[in-house]
Image (cartoon, rainbow, N blue to C red; front, side, top):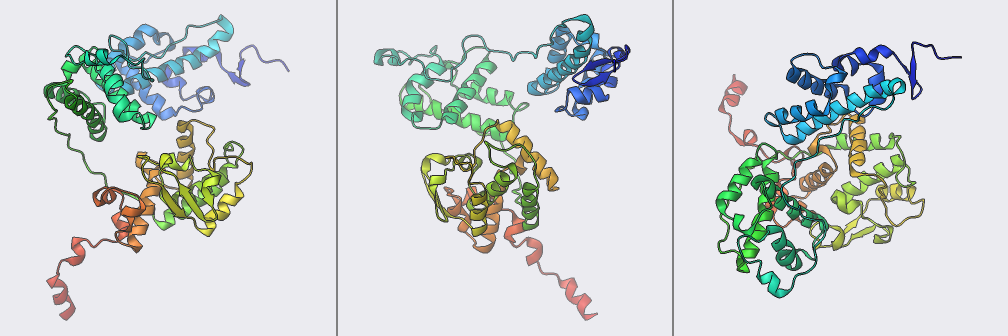
Length: 441
C-alpha cells in the first residue's frame, strides 16, 4: 500500500508536513516529538522553550533556532542562571530543532546542524590528564618564582611526592581545582596567585555555581597544594583561608518496610543484562551485599569472586576509599543464595558493569520509582550505607563507627537516621505537669 502524498514517513512513523510551520511550544507536545526525543522529558522541553520565547519576545519557530541566536541566548542566560544550566537549555533547543529538521531534510536535503555551544576556555593550555616529562632538579628549583605555572608546580613538585600512590580521581580533583582557579583569573594560575584575597575571591565566584560542600572540597585541595609548596619554600606565605558555612543535611536511611519494597522492585525489574547477568538478579544481590557490608559503590563494583570464601567476604584496602584499611565481612545466608543465582556466566567480577555510570543511575531511578521511593541525589546507593549504619546503631550503640571504618565518631553521626536509631528527643524527656492534672480530674 502506497503512502499518501500528504504524509512523510520517518523511522516508521508518519508525520504531517504542517509540523514545520508550528511554533516550538506546539511541536514539543506532538507524538512526533516524543517519538524522536524519547529520552527528553516534555516538561523540561517546555521550560526551555518558554525561556527562548521570553528572550525573543514572541513564540519561537524553527527558523529562530540559529547558531547566532543560541549564542546570544546563552550569554543572556548566564547572567541569570548557572552556566551549566544555560548550556543545557541551549542544547535542548538545538535537539528540538534537529528533530524538526529531520523531517524537512527528507524533502529539502541536508540541513545545518545546531551545535552545542563550547565551554569557555581559559587562555593558555589546560592541564593534561597525565604528568608531563620530568624536569631536571635545576629546572624544578627554577619553579620557585611568582610567574611559574601552578600546574607545573603540581606535576613536578607535589604530584610525585604526595599523589603518586593515590587514586587517579584524586589527581583529577586537583586538576579541576587548578583549572577553575585559572578560569576565575582569566589566565593559567601561577604561584604568585596563591594569596588569601585571590583564593577567597575565587571561592566567592563559585557560590552561584556550586554547593558550599563542593567549594570547600575545592578549597581543601588548593590549600593542601599551597601548604606543600610553602613547606618546600616555593612560596613564602602559608594560607589562611576560612571555609564556607555548610548546611548540615539530615541523614535519611531506608526503613525496613522501604528496604523490603526496594528489594521487591529489584526482583521485578526487567532490564538489559549486565555483561550477561540477569538484571533482576544483579540488582537484588547487589542490594543485599550492600546492606550486609555497608560498602560504597566503588568498592561494590570491584568485588571479585575469589574474594568470597564461604560466607566471608574480604575487601582489600586497594578497593576501598583511602586504600588503607581492608575489611572482612560475614554475608547472610539469603545474600549467599542470591549470589549463587548470578554466578553464571563465569567471570572475575561479582557485579560486572558494561555501561556508563549515568545509565546505571538512570536504571536505579526506575527501580526506586517502581518501589514508590524518593529518587533524589541523596537517595541513591549511598543511602544503603546510611541504612546499614542506622540499623546497626539501633541494635548496638556505638558499633557503626568501626563497621564503617570511620576515623571519628563525628563522621559517623552524619550517617545515622534518628528515626531508626530511636535516640531520645527533648519532647520525650521534658516533664508535663498538666498531664497529671488531667489524670486526676
